[in-house]
Image (tube, rainbow, N blue to C red):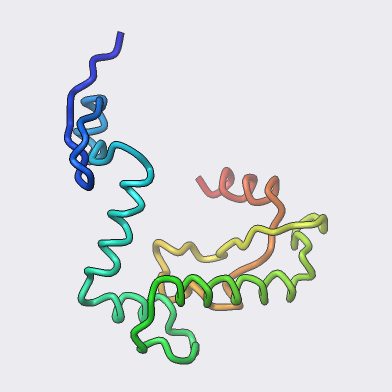
Length: 138
């Protein structure tokens, strides 16, 4: 039997049960995924340096990145960029050649944030090849 602690949701204030290990690991702050999403949106919108953050991640020659735009604007830029990569690779896995829709970063996003949207740092992969690559790199 698992013991749950009672916590207050950081967004809506509802009480919910959470495992002690989740609190210990810095989790267990939200009663639902919806509240977690709201917190993420608040964090981006409330971040005074968000333009610097976005510019650092998207600085590979994209136009208008310093303009103040909503998250919806940045999401649309990403969707258009992703579509161009898929079209460039003919929606085919670059390893096995079957139909694919996953964009894989050759140099990982965590260690190379400046290459987030660099066209020469991504390839299109199918799900199984993407899983194999990440298992081999782990």
